[in-house]
Length: 502
Image (cartoon, rainbow, N blue to C red; front, side, top):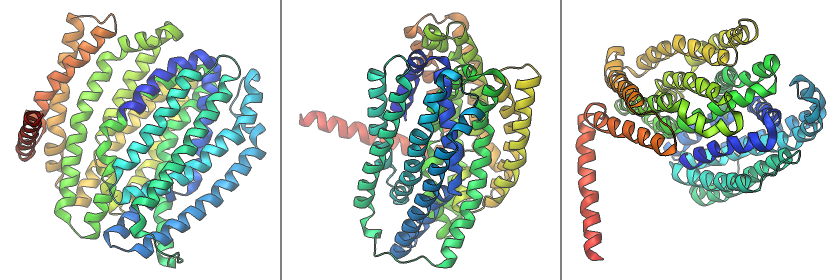
């Protein structure tokens, strides 16, 4: 995640420089097409991982194989129809997205090739990575993604040309990267999941109906959740032109780098939550919710304060050469995005717990109306209230603050955890650390202004050093501190023994 995030950050000024503001905005709009058409998987990609994990927990190899095969066939059919539709309606999409005349020809040719190719590969690859993750081999999934994405980004970093051809090279490299990711993921899946691969047989009607029903809920939840943010570039382009996206997108890219590192537990615990549910292990499910949320908030404290404290000098150093004074506008957007992210970090491990138990109806029921409010409020703030680019982020922040307490209460009740226990155990320690760390950040910035990359790194190091003892003493539970101390002593002994042997 760190490698991908750092390279993504390095690529932003390069892309703006090589593609221009409008070209960079068009590239972002092409990705919006991919994101919205990908919702047509009807939630199968989101549901298949959970159901495959249940088959593994029950040691049901035949059910594992049949469910996997039918999912692949279904998504191949859907992606084929969507790709054909993108080809037929490519001209209408270009006009709908208000693409500048100078880039209309490029966008028209890239919609079927780039969007269609990324869509098809994006449908199939997660099926095989989900099957591998169902056996808790996230290490393999992540290493494959890291190495291949790293290679693709390095190619762009060194070989992306200037001029009108840059957008074609960019799209070609991304499709080639996605194809390589698919092939390597498929090979690793065959090797790791071989014990669960049997002769194909049609899954029962009940299991397919269960998958499609749950997948439909995941689809609705994912669609409306993503709509709240993925509609932002469309709204900005409609009212302010594609150039506005070059101010909005860099801030979102920083968020896309930081968020996965903070939410890593939520991204990897779904198979474990499903296993606890399948074996009726209520105590472990409660521990997963309480500790998972506590640690997510703990890392979220450092990430949020770090981003907000360093946003302005970082954006000036990062984008000042290509955006000039607009780099400060990016910093303002980034600080607002960091607030939104902090509210999202409060979700902790609620998602794997609710998905593992198939109890996501409440999430869907709250997501839909709040997304509608978010969209309406974004349009009003950007288009009619004169707030500008920050309007779409402010709208998201308001709706997130209103919805998150409801989900916290619901998840605690579903797991049989008292709300007061959930709040005091999982949230209070991290919130206290956040406040103290924010004060330290303000004092450090006031005492020593940041004027270059070295001082910026020093400030980041000071925040990390200040966070570490607070996290160990007040953030990590006592039983985990004992385990951590024992693990550290064991590591030091092994290291000393190894050094002595040398």
